[in-house]
Length: 492
Image (tube, rainbow, N blue to C red; front, side, top):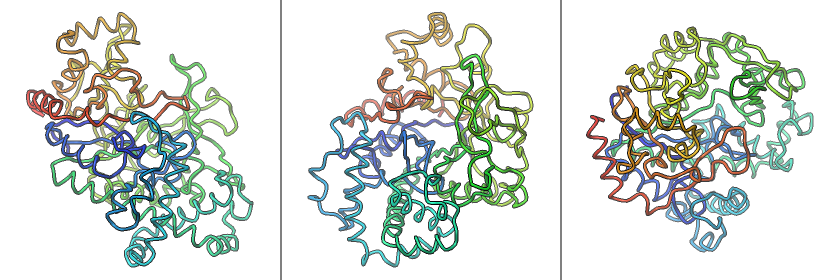
């Protein structure tokens, strides 16, 4: 149950350390300490699944598995699975402020193989227990990754027909032929969740709850779809019949073509939404609160025929609506969920969200469009909502001030009574913290007053996203005290 409080949004990748990408190591524990000193109650992160092409946490090889990039090497050394010389002189990237995913992929994964070889005698029983507890998804995921490696990392759609279609004989063949590789991918998951569980416990013990994040859809190139074809709208050759997207609007004349396969909601209803219940159950184990991306898609979603180059020729299709969440509540009880309800909202979608009872989202950067009255202006908030200065898909506050329309900037200055002495970013944060919203979240970049160079993602672009990292010296006592003071001022 979320009460009046606040938190900070920063993904695991953005944590500082000498190894090229944020991990579950010492700096993650220090960030928890920073949050506690800053008077915060929540740490919000992005999806933590294994990433592939484009490095987006919203396009993962599995909705159940964890990203091996986050495994901390120093912690493996403490477990005597690595020696310092195994990784101390490895090139993980040149800049402490940027992730070089190519170097992480090429240079970190081989080090994790060394740890795997050293683990065989030490953690055999623990790994067997982990396998038994996660049987529902782990075996398929590990086999999927092993076969993917065997086929030069190609999507499963490009594998040999027999294993692509999960012919029983082919499954048995690859399970034997790739046994060692399968065990490697299982080991990575065991270590990932071993380290994550310890970090989450430390956070909870220090008064910090974790807000996790799941996309509504899963990637076509994923173990989820390969192993659960019946859950999705696929033809006999396992090609998508229809894919996801957004209709054309003022921002995009051709709409947005996301390309994720659409769920077979008819089949899911017949199974009482078993797959989705398992997915939410997994997230309850990982996080204290789960944010579901594109929540309105459960009421109705934009479906585009497979093979289209834009989203123009799509159509609205009815989703499962409240039936899905009634089934989730019946199976799992009350679950803390944040409904990402940004974008065009019909009365039906608003009624659906209210019936589910979950808080929606307000983004302060969206509030100051002078062309029309905005639902994102704080005087229009209801208590049951979560306010963000901006999300991972938005510019930073200071970037917004540099790039927004002049009239919108002047409106924000008047509305929030902003001045340079306080700092525009701090005035923006004040606007969020002082609102009636029961939870206020700001990106760490906004507390630091960083510009567009620190932006996490520009939607519909590739190459420069998900790479920003914070400098260790930025997370200091002075900043923690300043955040604590303004947090207390507004009763959070």
